[in-house]
Image (cartoon, rainbow, N blue to C red):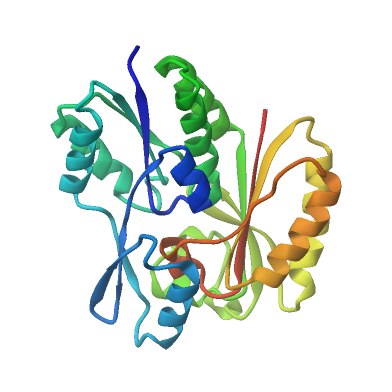
Length: 280
């Protein structure tokens, strides 16, 4: 029986212990800070990056992995005849998935490329489940069917305390209905097929809590919420409060609260959060 191995990119926010336990292979993107290029790997933690970004002269710039790095990894993983499933952040945010696709055509290994249509912990839902199923010996078609099911049933909300980074990074055009005159507003957006759709706007600290109350009502109406993940960019206190309330609704669920990756934090800025869930 062919062994299946899982690859993703460093926009996938997950606990290192989970990554290592499931033998998930992560190809790092890079981030340039004041002319110095850093690999987005374990040496550049989210907390360390936030400090570096705060003191940087310009907004850091992110870049996708080189195609050759994917080819090298795919070839190595397939030396024993394994099939690779490579799952990546949405093409709407990065060319990473296309680089992976080009690499798959150059590799000697059989590789299936999946555009997750999301990122952060939304991406990790697909990656972790695929890795768990691969470890359990499930076949390729069964794993792919489950990944596609999770992709179609994942919802991601992003809360921003500032739009400065989106503007500087040229991403503001994706935030339909947001004007530069309200840059100082707090906004919660629905990340839907790479589009940022505002659902709540406000100037005060209650903006996020007001949205969160309606979000909990949304969850209560859903029959089978399988997993929830909370990410933040130097916004741990708010993230922990969200977890406390969600844990009361789902006492048996393990809800990770993780600092997002430098790749995501570059665009969201300080104080941002994301809550992602999927249903079955």
